[in-house]
Length: 125
Image (tube, rainbow, N blue to C red):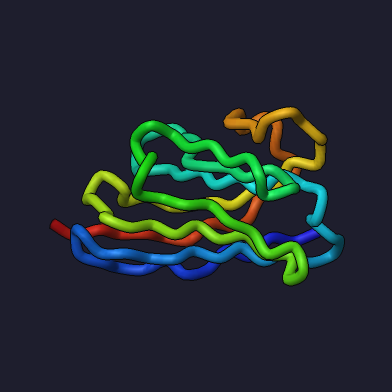
């Protein structure tokens, strides 16, 4: 199983980026998709996640209202739409898959079984 994240880059504050994460090797149709990020010198933190039905999403307070997680099960792909970006959003962004069927998408790193390699997002002021 492999997760391939893409879409990162350099953007000015206030701009937008859309990250993608494509899964290969098995279907992620019943998995929760999560996004995490890690800034230099900091721990990896939760950004957002979406349940396998697509009906339940949750976000970190720091990105709520600016970021949106979505998924396309037919394409085995998840997305992270990031709007109104701020310099403090600069980090490596990781996608992850959780194979456990939970009532709510998890925000815990330990609950995710598969991880992508990360994509760099840099927001300039």
